[in-house]
Image (cartoon, rainbow over all chains, first blue to last red; front, side):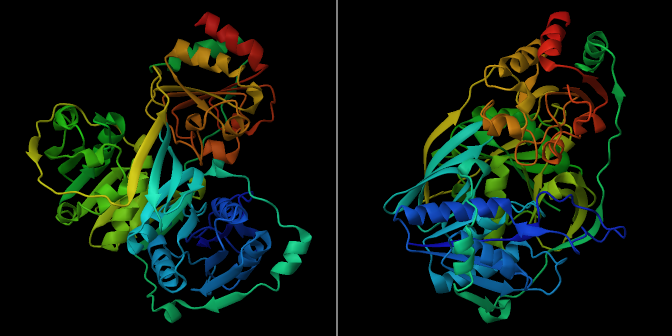
Length: 252
Length: 308
C-alpha cells in the first residue's frame, strides 16, 4: 500500500497571529513557519502504519511557495520516503483554497495511485476543515474524518471518529481519505541522523500547470480584522462576592 | 434565491439547538426549506415544521441516514441540492463532515464556520483560532455554508411549514457504520447550555474533577474542560472547549483552574459573562474574565456550591 500525506506550511502554532494594519490579512513576513500540527499527526500515523508492515511507501506533498521545501524536508526526516512540492504561488500571503488543493492532490493521485491519503483535519491558519472531504469527493473515494484510531484491514480500514458527544466507529472501503484529529498519536521528533538522511531523499518539484490544474479562488477575502476584544474585569475580594456574581448571571 | 438547510438528525433524534440556530442564520436571507433525512422522520419533521421561517420540510426516510454518513448525503441527494442557491448546515461534526464533500462533488468551495451573514454572498468567519475575523465573498453559483451556531439565536417555535415527502433511491457502498460510543448525560449539551463550568490543569486529577461536576450540577450547567485537562486524562475529549474542541457562548462561563491559553480562549471568549477562579494572579484568563477570584480552587469551589 502506498500512503499519501499532504502537509501544509503554516504560521507556527506558538506564534500569535497579527492582523495587518491595512486589513489585508495576517502578517507572515519574518515569522516562524512550521508544519501544520494536524498534518504532523497524519504523517506520524502513516509512518506507524508502514512500521507495522502495512505500507510500502509514504509520499509527502506540499502545495504553496518554494519555501515549503523546508516543511517537506521535515516530513522526510520524520520518515516519509519521498516528497512532491507543488509551487503554486510566489507570495506567502496567498493562501491556496481547499478546493484547489483538492484538485491538485486528485491530479497527483491519478499518477501516484495511493490507497490511503492521510490529512490533518484542518489547517490552523484558515481553519476551513474541508480539504480531505473535498478530495474524497473528487476521487469518489470513501472518507473517514476526525480519526482518533485507525486500524488497517484487508480491503477496508476501521476508523474511530471524534464526533459531538463521543466517538463513532465506521468501516471505510480502501481507497480512502482519512482526516486525523488531535488524539490519534503524538508525532515523533526527527533525529539528527534522519535529518541528514532526509537531505538525500528525492524531492520532486512541479507546478499546477504540469498537472493541468487551474488555479482558481472562489472566496474573495475582502477584509481581515481583529476580533472584538474583551477587557479585563474586576478582581473580587472574597467568595461571597463571587457567589453573588454567579447568582446574578445564572439564567440572566 | 432558494435556501436549503440540512437538519442534523441522529438516529431519528433532531439536534434541535444546532438546527434551529442554523435556520436562524440562513433565514436572515429569506424563507428556507429544510431537509429532514433520517431513518425515523416523524418526530423530527414535526419539530422542524414548528420552527419559524421554514417554508417546506422535505422528508426523506431511509435507514441509510441513521448515522448521517457523509457519502449517503453527498452521493445521492444532488438532484435536490441543485435546486437551491444556498445550502446551510451547522458547523458541527455532522456539517463539517458532509458539506465539504458536497462541495467537492459540485466543484464549489465551502464557506466554513460563519459567524455572521453580511449579504447573500458575503460572510464573516473566524480564522487563526479566532485571532482574526475574515470577511469573504463567494463567487460560486451555489453557496455552501456551515454555521458557527453559538453566534446565532434559535428561531421561535410558531411556524407552520408544509411537510413534503421526497422519493429517492439512496445508496452508500463506501462506508459502513459499526458503533457509537456516546456518553449519556442528564446535563445540558455543552454547545447550547446557558451556563458552563469548566476545569483546567489546575484541577489536578480525574477524581478532583468531581468538584467541577458538582458545581455544574448545582448550577444546572454543562461541564467543560481545557485541552490541558483533557490531555492529562482528567476529562473526556468531548468536554473540550477551545480551538481544537467545542466553541461555546453561554450566558455564564465559569473557568476553574484554567490558565487561559489562546487555544482555550478561542472556544469561550464570546460568552456573555466570564468568571475565573485561579490561584495564579498572573494567569491570562483574568485578562478576559469579567470577574475573577485569586484563590485556591479546592477551597473556593466547595464553598460556592454550599452557598448557592
